[in-house]
Amino acid sequence: MRPDLAGLSPYGAPRIDVPVILNVNENPFAPAPEVAEDIARAVQAAATGLNRYPDRDFPELREQLAAYLAVESGVELGPEQIWAGNGSNEVLLHVLQAYGGAGRTMLTATPSYSMYPEYARDTQTAFVTVDRADDFTVDLDATRAAMTEHRPAVLVLASPNNPTGTALATEDLLALLEHARTTGPADTPTGPDDADTPTATVVVIDEAYGEFRREGTPSALELLADHPHLAVARTMSKAFGMAGLRLGYLAAARELVDHLRVVRLPYHLSAITQAAALAALSHRDSLMGQVKLLRDERDALVDHLRGRGLEVADSDANFVMFGRFEDRHAVWDSLVSRGVLIREVGPQGMLRVSVGTPEENDRFRAALEEVLS
Image (cartoon, rainbow, N blue to C red; front, side, top):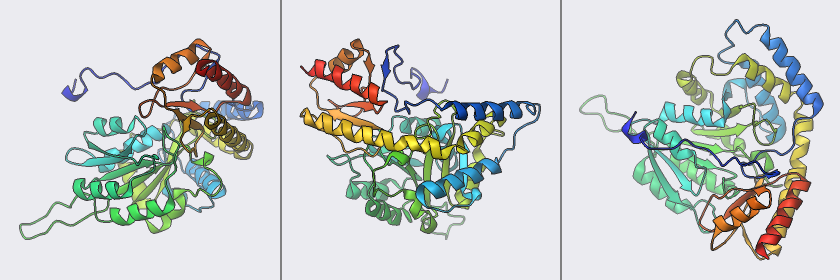
């Protein structure tokens, strides 16, 4: 085994058999019967051709993902600007495979998604972090200074951020994109008289929870046209309620997408995955109808927790980070004993709860009330 991997444990959130599971930011609503039936029919049809390899570049799926983004965010993109993989995890790994590697650096702002350092580790990319501000927004000055110092090949920022739920302000993203035009790794000189040529840092905005953003919070997709070094990652796991499907995707300039096609494994999206994703996308209106309910439940949860005197981070996601507790593990453990599983993650003293069904949220509030009392 590689020495840098020896002794490490695989990533994973706790899996405990309790009635209310609110720890991994899943959509709590199972697909409606008509959605499940259409997916089953599509998979059955695909199964008749499983002796053949699937289309490596899945143009129909890319076209339908672009059509969905046009409705969801108002941004028109061509299918050649879309890429997809086995969850947004694989898509972000493709980015690191294409732009990272030995001698290159990935930068992010913490606290943030715990898989980011693993993408860097697995591609032998140096991993550098900068602290977020006290309100969990991106510290613009500190981030730009780190970009200047470390010349990262890739800057990854989650918006809404996991585990805090914080969205990145458009003016801050624009400032970072402008700074990133010349902060990438220098081109290697081809001759003794050649000077280093500055390159751009690839800026990836991870919008896994983008559909849950509050009214008036724009998507980074709106900035793609003027920023060829920007990529925006999305997923069908959260808002679509398709975590078990494993379909994540990314929107970017065609040239950037073509770079990702170089590093992907052949036939990395199975015919079954492509068929199921297309069937789910055909129901996007009804599936997205659940998003408003979850937003409303999130906002009610924020108000309730603040009403109990707790510190609660503003959230544009389908989860809420709250605290602070002297012994957060004791609170987490007490909730588990009452049949409610949330996540012990984020800054010291903080916990994160996913937004569940109205009934699940009521059970969480009742259990927390008992713990706090």
